[in-house]
Length: 158
Length: 266
Image 1 (cartoon, chains in turn cyan, purple):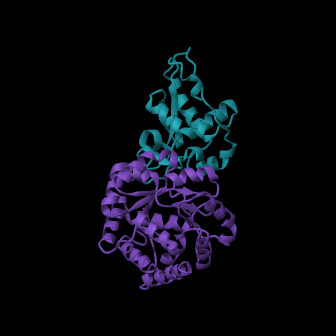
Image 2: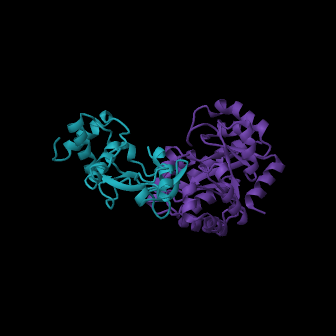
Image 3: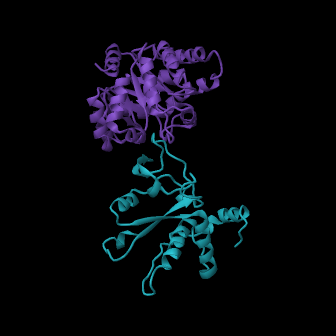
């Protein structure tokens, strides 16, 4: 998603990580923000780990983000400050998931719902003639059981 | 001379096979590890492979994985493993190869890790998730501290690459018997015979075979086509079955000695 826009400095690039139950809850997958460089599964990138190099267990409501590492390309884009990285919690992601379902009839993947949540808050600070592109990277029908569990275990309703 | 080099040379000149048992340091606890190493040595080990437990041991099957997790839970840090090697060295000269993963070395810092391993009395290391393309600095620092680095080939390694890996591997090459993780396999020898013949025809350094070797019969047959075997999960299983038993060391000795006797025909 970022690559075609990297050469244009007038476009602000924002990446969104999963902060799960909160950045200080011990249950998140905010690897770029909270991790340190390390090697896992054959790639060197930011990694959630303890001081000995043992890998921490990650958490996110989104299965695709529930990983203690992150792609080396994101690590590079962070280090070279070409992309700004921010975080979104499980609750915020599900809220954004609801919005897209209700207003557009599109079920987004929970991974993409993190980007949507960040976009919704960013848009409030923008002027009317500025545009936002969200990478809707996948579909949410695969996440229906997770969403069902989420509502079953919380007092909220869609 | 480095203890691994000396042992491999001596075995090679006698035409004898290397017997390399593996155990996870800190399993069942760090105080028992030196006693287990002593037991392995007395039961015929030529070299001992000592696992430094890692949270994500991607080369290891369920047996070694769970021993690693238990070792980490009971406080087996890298420093605890180094101290353990130092304790072993008070009474033993058996060559010790540390089996660990790249991230633990990076976090400790490569030079500091090698220095500490060497000063504790370790002789070399084997890092299954370190490809040869990324290994230059590790090898350089290891050699500066008189440590040997062993590299692995697998059934998916093409002969051309086997030669490259052989060149970078000190003293001998570790031949992974099968694709997949460590742990017992049925009819191992029959499955890997053609592969061992390819390795034998390609590699001129001694090579030992590990992963899945779990009994005397497989060990004996595999040793006939190679320069030795590594046995890990099968020993960890014996330790697991006997960990609360006063006869732990005795039963480990019995099991290991039986495999060793299969090899000592050569």
